[in-house]
Length: 313
Image (cartoon, rainbow, N blue to C red; front, top):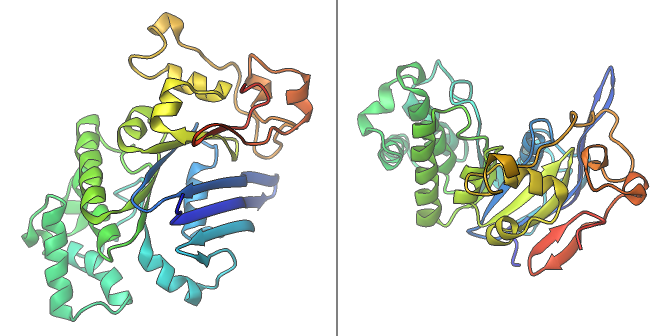
């Protein structure tokens, strides 16, 4: 794959008074130009931390992030600036991600101003055009965020993310705070923009139905590690990791109905003290002794489909 983004052995840990949180622990994946990679997993598995590490908002401590041929891990704030123009983010909370004291026009013009794009008049015209592109009115440039609904605010956030024509947009639970009917509108907008501008997305979500609709490939994360990755078709047709099977059995139209759905027992282990061996083994119905002592390597199972499980074959 000709990768736009390549991540190798990425590590992000948080040191707290209770100990060290292993939020992201040796993650590998790639995203190709124009590709949508969905990232799914339970709350607390490290998805959002991974997204923020990629964008330098919560810098990684080890590993490699190669974006457009440049290494990002270890860069200072000034060196990050040209890469931020190419890698933007849409956050989960459309209420908290927009400055309530700024007009929408100012919010949309700020990225252009920071990167020295256009004159003041040109930036205002661009802001108006962006609003129209995401389904709002050009006249809304002089309104404030509190005057909009949640779905409209997320449209403004998306407009801000595409203002600089980035190559990659990281969507961190970008629709989870919205009503279901609004979610569909925002997902369709993201898909339309992706096709129009040739964007790549890392789409982080716990909603498998949304991820399945939008993504080309899907990565499954559990307790700081990616346990399975492959094309949408291959994962939906035959998930190989026990955790992925449980997740996907809950999708509508799969598993033969409620009686056939699989469920997990117990709570996820604490990222403060992850278990030895396979991190899923305390909840896995198939676990053997090897799973309790040996960390499973990510193995290629078919073209573009890999899983980190001793029993995947």
